[in-house]
Amino acid sequence: MKLLKKTASISALVILLSFALFPVASSGLTVMEEEQLAREYIKIISAQLEIVDDPLIVGYVNALGKKLLKAFPQQPFNYQFYVVRQEVYNAFAIPGGHIFIYTGLIAAMEDEAELAGILSHEISHVYCRHIAQKIERSKKINMATLAGVAAGIILGAAGGGEVASAMTLGSMAAGQSAALANSRADEIQADQVGLEYLTKAGYDGQGLLTILNKIRAKQWFGADVVPSYLMTHPAVEDRLAYIDTFLDTHQRKKDPAASDSAETFNVVQTRVMGLYSDEKVALNTFKARIERNPADPLGFYGYGLALARSGDKAKAVDALKQAVALDAFDAFTLTALGQVYFTSGQYQEALSTLQSALSIDPQNPEAIYYLGRIQLELGNPQQAAAHFETLMKKGFRGNQVRYFLAQSYGAQGEMGNARYQMGLYHLERRDLRKARAQLARALDDIQKPERREEIEKLLKQIDEQLAAQKKQQQGRG
Picture 1 (cartoon, rainbow, N blue to C red):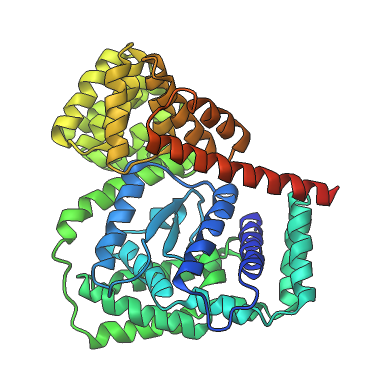
Picture 2 (spheres, rainbow, N blue to C red; picture 1 turned 120 degrees about the vertical axis):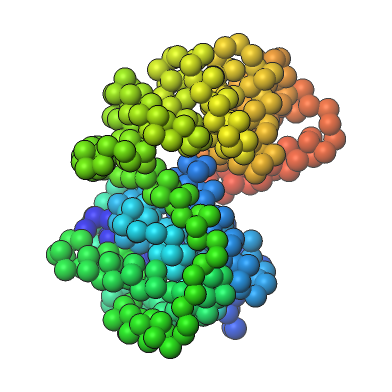
């Protein structure tokens, strides 16, 4: 129940933020306004929810999302897909093409078709501009309601916890909260549009029907476990009826690329369960799985991940070696084994194992990352920096990559680049003061005009944000 309240509080906060940014909209949001609002939403969500930065999981979900988008008409947004670490059934979209899906929902799925169905539905909410229209409608809520929401947020920031959340929920219920929710019509339209383009992408829609039935079935376990998805996506019964009719009246066709990505889905789901679900549940699930089928490499892979996470590195190595014995050319398992060797301080074993993984899959970001970590530990900062730079060029900009790239530069005496990267690292962590200190010092060593101009612009933005924070604090005082 706490998760539901927290989700509702976040929703209330972004609604209030929408008023602050666009108080007098007359015909919905423009694309530019929607993108501006999206940036503010991301800040709030990142502060409240744990976003998974696992390159394999996030990379796969984004690749599937991009595949679906190719079937849609061209859109003005640069879509991004995120995975939230929470064991609940939920997914949602925010303005500007940002779509979030929870680890709990991924773990409950059977195949890629179910994930594709959910993602296509959320893409359709953005495509149909339901979010922009909802914000436009929300201006009708009276100021008393907004004041109640604001009070709930302030109490929450001051440590009010569940009382603040309850107050926020109460004030929302007292006003016209229905105007802020996805309507029945919105949901049906998102299904209609989503199924059309899901079919064009090569999926038949059966996956969406299957996962919705699972979500609906979850609600019968009790009020405390009602899926968050049902709170934000109403009319599930009507949706099921519509999808069932769609499947009966449309010729089903098999995804021509399903066989190519089905294995990756299985690996990703195993990884989600092994690394991000309840630790004890993961250990018991995979232990039972390999007892039922001792020739299941994915079972041993998941068990190894769960064991490593629990701290039992020796047993993790044994389980992952068994997985390798069953499938010697699986880069994912070799990478996981190399990671366990690395965290156990067995650098040479880690080095040879990860190099083997990279020879099978040269694009494996996790293998590249840990090879960089190993080279840094072995005193080879130049080689380490090359690995981290490769990841940055590939677009994988995980904050830890930036941190260790800064360490690699510093070990080589490239202090300007080291401080620049460390400044960006702190900026992404929203530590403005540390970010400013590092970036200001970077200016002492960097001579390249373009980089200096970029740093000066960042410093100006940071100073503006710090000044705004100081003014806000003085106002509260």
